Length: 337
Ligand code: NAD
Image (cartoon, rainbow, N blue to C red; front, side):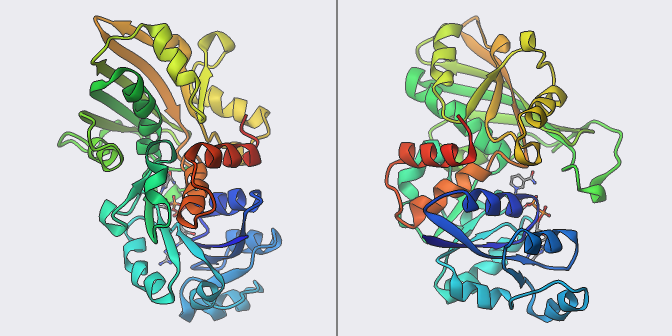
């Protein structure tokens, strides 16, 4: 059993902890929080060993009656690998601590590519992460793009990708960024960073992206336009995408006409925290016009990258050399069929 620690038990951290816990080849040895509060309390109630992310704050937890087992340094002594789920930019500052402790580390998409020198997507470059000490999991939007661009590139040879990303303004629990009532070009100076981020995983792809932020917390929506070396028909595209291990075809005919209805479906399915780990592609939107492919997909920002974290742990700790087998194992354990 590979021993996994989580630094930063927030939106991503708590989901990675739960996903690791249901795998049979890895276990959580502890999670950190910076401050006491309901998330720290629930972590302990769920059975996770809790550690103070900041050593000087240990007593704050004890004063509120929350058990802490020690500090991040104590946790590092128990771990083979740590998943840094702290807010963007903090992870880079934590890297020397992990290095000194001799513990492998995964960083998330809020960090720059340089933090690890290797940006990961299970379907695209799993083999490159095998045995590595440091890996960065690309953001939810980049993960969602990589999952469709890679197989279509393999099948038809991508000439160029142009995408507009309609982004949720904040996560549901993130009141600091709301309420808002605006449509924000984000950023105004184009292109957005998402295209270059895809190239950290798939350097050969010609991709340009634009992004706008809108007042919703539920999901992102991508509008994709792709041109290929050999022009496929819409049915050829569907046949390729349908094989993706983390792709779900949805349809307006089934009542799935918005991100809100996708979330309602996830609730009805009993998904934990109504998470939607897979890309949701509107099958009815897939169309080839004048040799160019168009379609819509929805990406659940809070949960899309969780499966990739599990696969990266497997690759970095040499638990599994085959991307396909790791993804199957992760998916099966999560109940994603
Ligand atoms: P979050 O704010 O929900 O959670 C971060 C956690 O880290 C919180 O528990 C916070 O208390 C804790 N923390 C803050 N400073 C810390 C420190 N110095 N040391 C240890 N813990 C500290 O953030 P998040 O949304 O989970 O994002 C984490 C990472 O995942 C970021 O890199 C982000 O860009 C990336 N990411 C986020 C999303 C998303 O939509 N939320 C999607 C994909 C990737």
